[in-house]
Amino acid sequence: MPQVNRLTRGEAAVGALQIGTNDMVYGIEFGTVAIDPASLAATTKSATTFTLTGAKTTDIIIVNPPALNDDLLFVGAAVTAANTVSIYLYNPTASAIDQAEATFSYCWIDTTS
Image 1 (cartoon, rainbow, N blue to C red):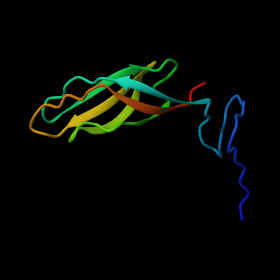
Image 2 (spheres, rainbow, N blue to C red; image 1 turned 180 degrees about the vertical axis):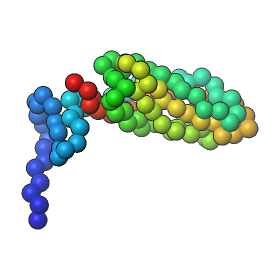
Image 3 (tube, rainbow, N blue to C red; image 1 turned 60 degrees about the vertical axis):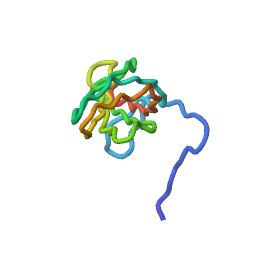
Image 4 (spheres, helix red, strand yellow; image 1 turned 60 degrees about the horizontal axis):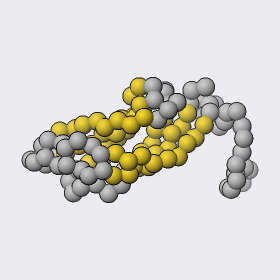
């Protein structure tokens, strides 16, 4: 049986983390952001941005959307510029959808020193 080292509680202060031969991880941040996207016209995709200070386009962002209006689809997120995260929503219906402000949660993995 393989050996497993696991930090289950508490904090570990390290300058960087590398698992196997994968890329280095310099930080992991969890947070939430309130976003009020513009009304989406029928059959359109749009991007709504928020500021995440320190994020770079080479970093990884994982976004968990809240419950959205019926038929409105969350279709992804990316760090699209320095300090800027874009959240993409798609409206596949035949009429506009206006999503009220909602709180999205995120995990930012800093892969650039």
